[in-house]
Image 1 (cartoon, rainbow, N blue to C red):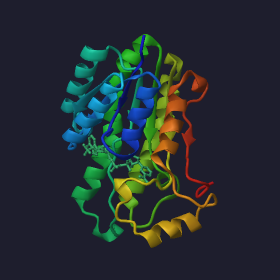
Image 2: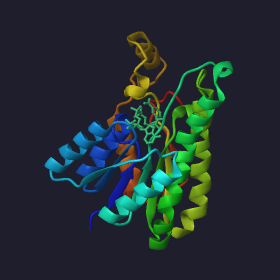
Image 3: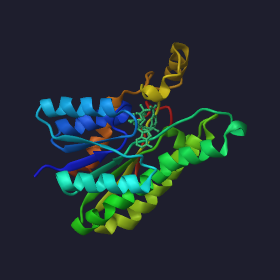
Length: 244
Ligand code: NAP
């Protein structure tokens, strides 16, 4: 029987590539989105036309009721969720002194509460099945901190703490919880970087390049597979050696 993977924020960037990679690997893929309805529909159609199973579900991961509805909708179509990839996230660059209460809360609501909401809603079935994988997408900045992204860095550090603690709690139920903390990846999130910024980042990176969405998707696919059954509570940071 096909396994089902729910990928939050799967319309663009890293999530989009994770969805395609999982579909090709034979998963039923659930494409969660918030705003990009048309992109979600196109991705679903593309996958469907190639013979893969995919569905799209709208939900703001920070909204508990919407997440609850999303999980029920997925379970009705595909049954139990085997893999949850908590990828949806937002970033913002601001001086610390200019971060508003609203900025702070929105970053934490999406990046941390979103992981809490989705994980808490899928776990009861995983615990019952004594099987499941949760993969959280943090960031290299959650490990080291980024200037002018204090709220983002703090939220991604929280995801790392959540991963470690939850891995200990649900390990006895044979559920692996791991975290991928990417370096700089070429997506819309970095659209404001100009060519010089990109060159500067490459110069600071031992491997001399920025990452691709494929680099992250392959890491996530590995962590979701049976090859990673003995790995839990770990933070893997594909970052070209920028943070070691
Ligand atoms: P992106 O291109 O900006 O895409 C973000 C995705 O998240 C979109 O699909 C968006 O959906 C979705 N999303 C945003 N808020 C949401 C919400 N409240 N509920 C549901 N979906 C929501 O971002 P990305 O660069 O691929 O980043 C993906 C993840 O990797 C994030 O957690 C990010 O922090 C992390 N990351 C990225 C980098 C990087 O360099 N790009 C580095 C380290 C970590 P809609 O299109 O429908 O709005």
